[in-house]
Amino acid sequence: MKAVLLDEKRFTADLERPTPEKITDYVTYEETPQDNKVIIDRCKDADIMIVGSLRIEREVVEALPNLKLIQLTSVGSNHIDKEACEDNDVKLLNAPDFATVTVAEHTMMLMLSAMRAQINYHNKVKDGEWKEKGRADIINAEVIDVENLTLGLIGVGDIGKRVSKIAKAYDMNVLWAERQGKMPRNDDYTDFETVLEESDIISLHCPLTEETKHLINKDTLSKMSKKPLLVNLARGKVVDSEALAQAVRDEQILGYATDVFEREPAGEDDPIVQLAKEGHPRIILTPHMGAGSRASQVKLWDIVTKQINDFIESY
Image (cartoon, rainbow, N blue to C red; front, top):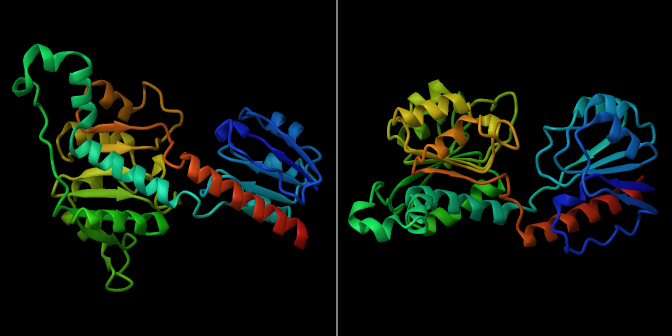
């Protein structure tokens, strides 16, 4: 079978990625534009499409009669038209669990950086303000320890559970949020509204679905009575960015640390980027790189290789 990898640039350049041994013809492209005509042309005789973050729409799936498998190099699959895959007998496989460790560590990095206003103070040293004014005159944001604070997790899959484990090592109290509007399924979970009310920090790890789009909005933000820090390692559209930016400006919440944005790549018109440009000490941003460690990429390619080989063998 022929396989086409559309976005090789997603991987570290010198990472060894042996071709899955069951593939007989293999073509790679460093990157592919978000253009259906280009995607169709590059995959026109492919049996297997390997792709990361490109949207694959119905037009593409229906134009590729040889296509049998779309193998994702991501956990999330909301950028693929699943109904089109089903209608055209194209199997869709994601790459589960490869990023559990690295995303959990990235979560804690963002959380601690925001609670300690790390970028704010880094800049004061870098720009010479510390030397010019002295330490006492540059302390403009409280340094907050996480010990004994309550961390509310929205989305308790493998990553959420890993974050729980790390947080408990910091002696944090951890609450697992049940889905909004549902009764807790067991004693491990707390109802959604209570998590909003009692958390000092809320960390998002849920998938993007119709149910979770703009889950964090003007209404849910208003219920966060402890004015928590929000951390987002889920998807940008889980958060209503305009509502969140206003909540930060109104001091309704402490700040926002995120690896994901409603529109990516985020530009200067993004309301969260604007907060960072204004110099808010607890806005910490990274460019959707939380799953990008070298170790996680090695795991990812191992998963992709095995799934492709298994698919070809069973086809």
